[in-house]
Length: 127
Image (tube, rainbow, N blue to C red; front, side):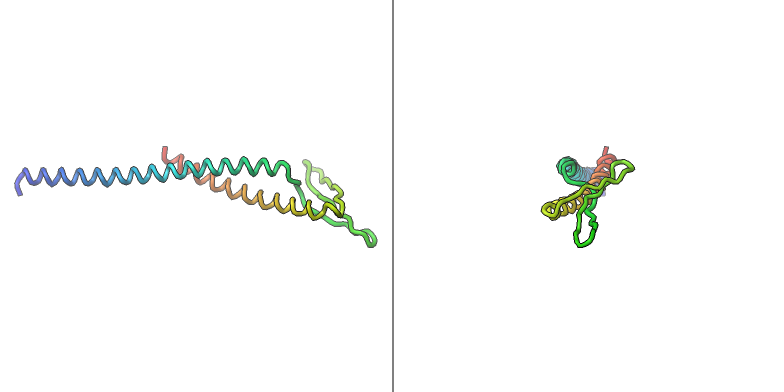
């Protein structure tokens, strides 16, 4: 093999290597772009959920039976105090469903916060 052939082979190897690296960089950029979009979606959803949580009732429903009558209360904390608010029989199903909806949204918020932390770490490592 002469010097000219060795040079051509080295040049071909260099160009192939550049193409491979270029494709890997493009793939990495696509992944980072996707992670950024996902982080934006997570932040948007967190905002929506926080707004919804601000209007949903906190606490749990408890019952108290006096004689043959059952009374329903929505109990929640305000600092160190436990607040009990009477809930009428006509309202109990609606309030119960709102409390359950709040619990579901709180679980979603927790999950989204964990996902956001992962996205932050990925993007932090990319800088």
